Each structure stands twice: as structure tokens, then as C-alpha cells.
Length: 145
Image 1 (cartoon, helix red, strand yellow):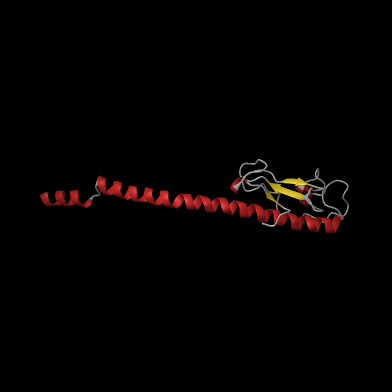
Image 2 (cartoon, rainbow, N blue to C red):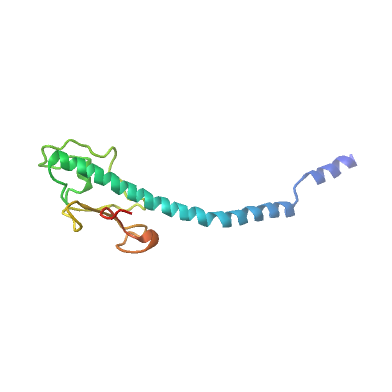
């Protein structure tokens, strides 16, 4: 009976062993987490650029069907539902509702645009404000990036 008690005491995990394991996990998380967050930011910027290209393609199809781009007032929603007064609309030109940008802000749509004959489409980035740098930089349809 004495022997069973000794075996039971030896078979458990000590507090020090648990602290060592928790410390190792915390160190690993501290080293890996920052690089994962950077990748997440890059992925959001890439997703916004891809979405802008999808809008440009859908707007091109819209113009082929109707002869003009949607006005600023009609906005990107004209790619999902026919605007009043547009008779040759053949949409929807997007498979789902017009999405928000990856940071949860609405895309800005302007036509006529200020940067050529095509509409301007803008995502203001992570901060939702015009201008900025890094992940706060504007992502725009008229620049190839």
C-alpha cells in the first residue's frame, strides 16, 4: 500500500513542469503572433485590390450593356439592381451584394471620375480616412499596384 502512494505522487505533473510548458507556449506565441498580424494586413490590402478589379470588370460589362457607367448617385449598387430609367440593364453584374472593403468600410464610387474616363473606386484603407501610409493608405482603381 505504501508503494502505491509513492507511485501516485510520482505519476503527476509538478507545478514547475506546468510553468515551464506555459512559458514555452507564451514565448512561441510572442514570436509568431507579430508576423501573423503582418500577413493579415497584407491579405486585406490584396483582397481590396482584387475587389476593385472585380468592380472594374463588372462596370465594364455594365457599360457594354447600357452604354454608360452608373452615376455617382446610382453607385456600385447599380451592379446588383437595375437603376430606374436604365432599360438595357442585363445584370446583376456581381454574384452577391456589393461588399464592404476588408476593414468594414463602404467603397467610394465616383462617376465621372477625376482620373480618366472610367469611374473612380476607392477604399480608404484600415483607418477609413483619406490618405495615410502602410495599411492606412488609400487603395484606388486608377493605379495598378
